[in-house]
Amino acid sequence: MTEVIRDVASLRMLQASWRRAGESVGLVPTMGALHAGHMALVNAAREECRHVIATIFVNPTQFGPTEDLNAYPDTFDADLQLLRDNEVDVCFAPMRELMYPDGFATTVKVAGLTEPLCGATRPGHFDGVTQVVAKLLNLGAADRAYFGQKDWQQLAVVRQMVRDLNFPTEIIGVPTVRANDGLALSSRNAYLSAAEREIAPSLNRIIRNAAAQIARGHGAAGVCEAAAHELIKAGFQSVDYLECRDAKTLQQAERPAKGTARVFVAAKLGKARLIDNVSVG
Ligand code: AMP
Image (cartoon, rainbow, N blue to C red; front, side, top):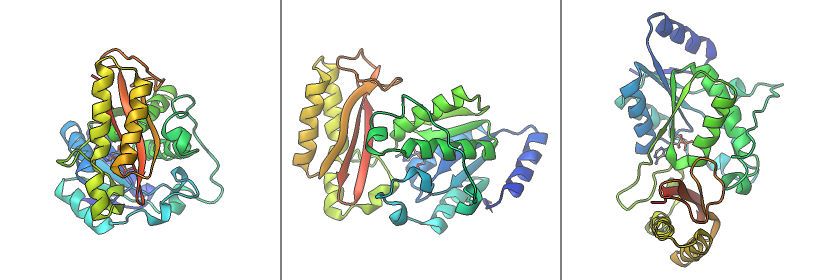
């Protein structure tokens, strides 16, 4: 039975009892509107840890002023059912005032990795991510925390923060879960109309083709530029970025060695901004 916890004291008490018993804990941070992608994280946590805490918190500090914070889907009852079906011990769903009480004044900033890609097109986004993940890692006091590779840059930034600040939690990356047509599952797919949902899988198809061409030795800049045009032709309104970068450093990669780089994309389709990334070679 999944217990819903909304305050820190109850969470700490439960964790203390688990720690006394020597039982491991896995943490799965989410913003709710849960789907099979989130459940892949939960299942990975369940396989490796005795207890699983999933968090549901739509973090306001990682949204820009013109972004979709107020429209972000809220499906708490269905989320809780999904967590119950997947044998999650605790759903930690704090109120905003608990996370950011009056007088809250601390940020955590990772340099470098936060600058390109989503960092360039969503200024301040990763400062919000590291702020909330730092809090959740402290609150979760977990042995391991699970993040999706769909948000590859986020995973890299969190790993860097954890390494730099000696958080005791091990960060685990989980492969992207996709629909049969290749579209990465995302809470934001709910914004797509039926017609847009037909167009959406071209995002993955086009970056896979681009990755294959780069793997065959074509220069990444030219391939990525052509792929961005293809996205517009397929029906996307705009492309925030479509770039080939080193998988670890996120530096531009023009002719990467096999398996060292990824093609990253963010593009707008209707009300949704969709992101994806795939390996080159
Ligand atoms: P979100 O609720 O969108 O903030 O996502 C919470 C966590 O689930 C993040 O670590 C995401 O990377 C991960 N996630 C979201 N969608 C997927 C997916 N399709 N496959 C794997 N992980 C995902």
